[in-house]
Length: 572
Image (cartoon, helix red, strand yellow):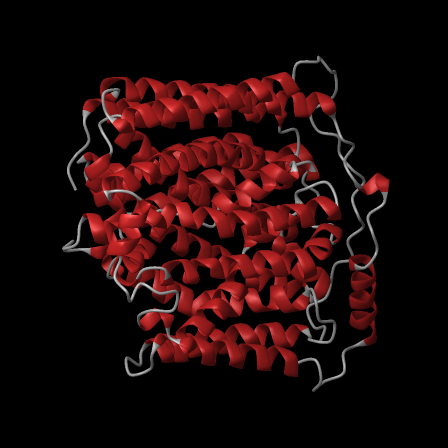
């Protein structure tokens, strides 16, 4: 991949400054630990849905899925649409439960549902997995930046890691969500620009479709086989439903209805936007028929069709995809370190102010560990092999007790421990057996973990105190929130948010228009001008909504639901 031109660097630099500025601005709205880790339960559901969508995609879609699309066609969409299922099931099953649970972190749920040892074990193991997992993400982003800019891998990783940590440390979940919205705009506008350019370069849509190979079907290639597709959908369902950031978005909004609407809009995003993301890679078969590395399909189309400046914005969009994931992971993992480990084990009487500063410190420490660790991911055999190893060992056994524990009442604490041990041991064994395919290994691990977890609900009768606590918890999950438990809707705060979004849209629009000036004689320049004007129009609408002055506190805090936690270590 060729290095970028000076205009591209300006586009990337302005984007980075915009992200850092938003985080610093939002820091003044964070008054306590609840604001920092769950947005005071006041995250608007539309913003929450956008953030949920953005925290599930990274440059991986423009590399790995793009390679599948180039080689096998529409099956890449069939695979990525697996993300729609957990969002829809979340609406039907999990959204109300997570919002009513009255928690600040996903791990806090484990103590109420099971016991303190389960919470601590899964917290420590979960933090370890998150560090390893995000090391791989940052390493992959560093590889992309290195290829795009010519910087060394080390400098690329350090630059990206510092920017993400900076705005997440200061602004907390609000910074994560608002920057996700801004990055969503940049990502969608940049990728939309490429679609008409791709169609034009291919000679029009009918001609392009006529040149696409016949085997580009919805279930084509080895990844389109029934067993692979079934296991892939099952794995994504388990991973996403138990993903900490996925859960966090459900309980960070105002009430149950907002939680469900957020999940439904997330499903719509998961269904629609991958079509835009993967369309150029499918068309690349007609535009660049003999591409040596299929995973470079999307980038190759960008290089072929986008001029300087606009290419820089596309690189910024790639940054956006991964940085959104990293910022969300930093925040929710720091929440577990602060709430589930520091406060629960070391300082139960910590003041709210102290907890807020500890939360920021934990975010900074996480950012540092992940950034330094990313420099050594190459020693694991690269991003793909490292991700495969870490996911196989931790993802399934770590998430199943979360996913099933909030729905099923009978499974007991020892079942959660046994599920974790079973999954890790099976992961080690199956990953060391090259003769066992990925789909069979994953299916065996999922079935074994589910069986072990379910069996724990029938083998041994639980102690009465434990059963009473679990019964009380499930009654809470089925009891609607009262008005006192919901944050008051505050027009003054929403006015501030609308103005912030409007300013971000203005900057984005001006950025797209400015970067397109040198290429106005080309179709790409004119399309980019149109995209910039659209951003300015949307900015005007957002500012119009915020035109009336309204006074009020930024976030009005609701009455918290009472938590019934375990104080023993030997409950069954």
